Image 1 (tube, protein in one colour):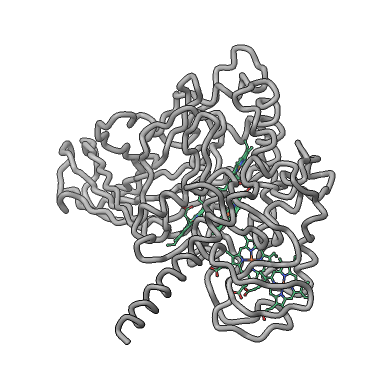
Image 2 (cartoon, rainbow, N blue to C red; image 1 turned 120 degrees about the vertical axis):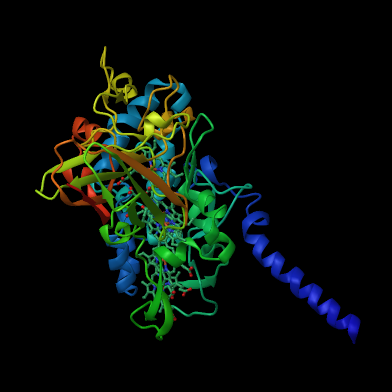
Length: 459
Ligand code: HEC
Ligand code: HEC
Ligand code: HEC
Ligand code: HEC
Ligand code: HEC
């Protein structure tokens, strides 16, 4: 009796372990993944998203609104791929692989069909389907130790892999997949290594070493929240249908409040001519990874601090330096130049570069990770990244403290001084966007949080 129970427990444990392990490693052994997938199939192996949308109405509308459906077509993607990546790949052997490789994540069906480069978005080809329903729902696992650079294995066909067992559909077979519910599934596209072997996207790796992994809070739990409803118009209602929101940096409501702010002065009363020190806490309370994550090469998260005296005059306060190595990249400058590799890629002789930060004020703290090209200059070309600078982003549940020491002007009027702290986010460095003709909205500064504190100036 006793041994039997033990045996049963063993086999249960073993069975579970096998299920968790099989789709990831064993099945994947002989199948192509990553670069091996190039040209292994045809567009017609995959169904169009509109076909899925006839029954999965809400999910289709959500997907259409998410960046997943625009990963190939949206203007900045088109510009970076066709203006920079393709020409660069054609003249620089070291990065030749990205001509096809970008699409392993941005237009997987084009990659699998071997359509390199695919027609531009205006041609309305099937590459425009971007990361489609049928891509994600026919992915079966990944090959290797770490998910990255589209190393998923994929079996397009009648079986759609989902999150529930035993469902019936008039259009296809369904199969419960453990893999689709893991963060490794997302990691196959959300971790990326450059041709120089540098991690240029590491959202899933950041998550894995952070607090949410230990608590079992996955990507899906924050980006595909569960809510009651029907997953298809003829389906039975469920308590927890996964919403296909995939909301991130393009969603102001997702960004808003992602970093919480508090501030205090070192005392409540001061006299003109004295130093006063404001301390600010910036807490990443909402993201399961660093902020910014993903395309960190082009994202800017920065903090601006103003003081308003009792007569309403405004003063901009620069951040106190901490003195760590590489700090200069984390403080906004009006004169620093970067992105000289754009000139090389476009074949412009004597290209001096573009404004590195293009922010309104000098001396603001920028929470960022600088990417460096093979010549050590800051780049927004993640595929041309040979090394990284200091990682001064805000980790999941991390709090960064910044101080602002202000020597009060001699003529500061008596009365209350209000201190306003603002946290801003921009998806694409403005100088780069403007130079390459990217639509204004891709460079829009979003105010993601603000806080206030005060002190009193004595007579
Ligand atoms: C003719 C209607 C119809 C079409 C077209 C259709 N489906 Fe379905 N699908 C269903 C129904 C019904 C279910 C079962 C839902 C239930 O019982 O909760 C289902 C289930 C699924 C599931 C499993 C869901 C789970 O909870 O595990 C996935 C995944 C899926 N469909 C993906 C797709 C994809 C991808 C396409 C397009 C290639 C597609 N479906 C096209 C009707 C359809
Ligand atoms: C980026 C990958 C991705 C794309 C694109 C995608 N899905 Fe999903 N889908 C998932 C994941 C992951 C889940 C399960 C999440 C979980 O359970 O943690 C899911 C769940 C589902 C479910 C079951 C929902 C439920 O909880 O009952 C259906 C049905 C479905 N997807 C259909 C679609 C259709 C239709 C499209 C296109 C309009 C689509 N999916 C696009 C990743 C994707
Ligand atoms: C605890 C909730 C939470 C979890 C878990 C989580 N995210 Fe996020 N994610 C957020 C929030 C909030 C934002 C918006 C702030 C930002 O852009 O970083 C975000 C932003 C993003 C962005 C846009 C990043 C940028 O700055 O461009 C991507 C991509 C992303 N998440 C993918 C993932 C993936 C992949 C996982 C799993 C490995 C994951 N997220 C896990 C909450 C979460
Ligand atoms: C087949 C590749 C692929 C898979 C698998 C994948 N993604 Fe993505 N994801 C992308 C690409 C490509 C983009 C960038 C789209 C763009 O902005 O061009 C993206 C963008 C995002 C964003 C940012 C959207 C924004 O508003 O900026 C979030 C959030 C996200 N994915 C979450 C997830 C989650 C969660 C999973 C796993 C359930 C997942 N992704 C799986 C390819 C993938
Ligand atoms: C390993 C998968 C992968 C590869 C390979 C890849 N990308 Fe991406 N790309 C993503 C993901 C995921 C995001 C979204 C990250 C985020 O939101 O922060 C993204 C974001 C972007 C964005 C920013 C979109 C925006 O709206 O801000 C551009 C532009 C882009 N990629 C272009 C490219 C180009 C060009 C290449 C090839 C040189 C490439 N990508 C290769 C996965 C990939």
